[in-house]
Image (cartoon, rainbow, N blue to C red; front, side, top):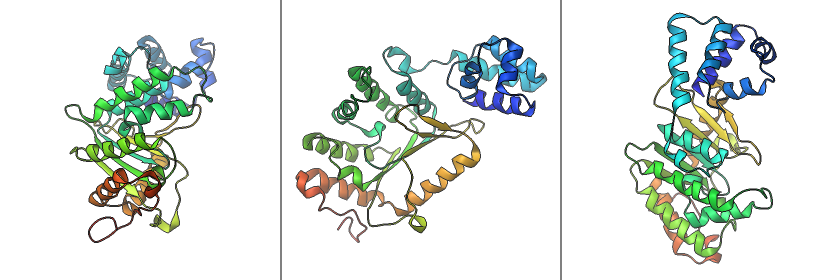
Length: 293
């Protein structure tokens, strides 16, 4: 993605369109270059050197980009052993594996990295009518395999704000939901994990309502673009433009300010895990002197 961002900026600086560059290189369509610029395909080093020739990049800048291109072309992750991991799961795995910090906001479901295998399988099965060609077993295994990133040596710092509606809506059978709630409590004990519930009763800044769930990935190298991901029913949207990312970072701050503190979130999750399904809706997520009241 860093390579793609650099190449896109170089093309724009050269005042060239995708069509003009592809015509000069004899590429059949603009899709190849578009995918390289969006970080959606692993680059061929020869292609990158051809692009640098067209953009007139020489000296140190050329050497730097060739090193990045080699790293991108040669990169291999733990997920490569999973031959049946689909492209969407692989893309999330790549972002999660490389990130130093991850922030997620979800409105209706528990985020993927915090899901139990049982909860994840329910989520996959729930969309089978929308994706008839999806191998549900393989997708469930891929989701579960991604979880190792939070328990590895030198894991990313992970923070999730989960809307209270995720625990009120019927998104899984009661026994699965109870196991999921207990799993969230266990994950919240990890030193690199912060989980907080966003209550119904506490408004965000100026009563703002987030348009959608989103994830923000920050990387160890400050030159790597911070990335926001919006999940859609078809292709996920990846944003790296600084101005666009800044909007989501501001909303993330508003979410943090409104969400329950960590200890009160634990109290809410513990009560919900011990309650009968029909009782969960009666458990308010709100700030209290001694936790949830």
